[in-house]
Image (cartoon, rainbow, N blue to C red; front, side, top):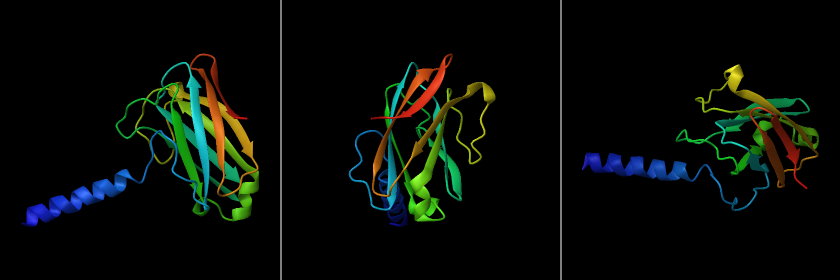
Length: 155
């Protein structure tokens, strides 16, 4: 009986956690306290990780996205990334949001410092936004390993 309870509890935790992240597809709805990025990959080859550094007023930080199963991010994949109010010292900071994108060409286990082997790390440029919470912004990343990558706000 005790083993069944533990198994049911673990299954419930896994089910709840699977709903916490979103991979592909359209987000159900942008929550008012979030800024959503809709990132369309349009690159020549699959990549390992996409890093995102942000700066807005006195707030700054970094994060990124990869697949939990360590599979590559496909060259034409649609990714979603969100920022919450807790990511900023002041909600007004987002009015001058600067995003810097970096492509990690090979899969490397993600780390909190966002430090990866230099030979795999390729800058993709910066996008500036006059952002607002509750809005979704579309960004396209183009390019390849040899010629470089470019991030641009989609029109």
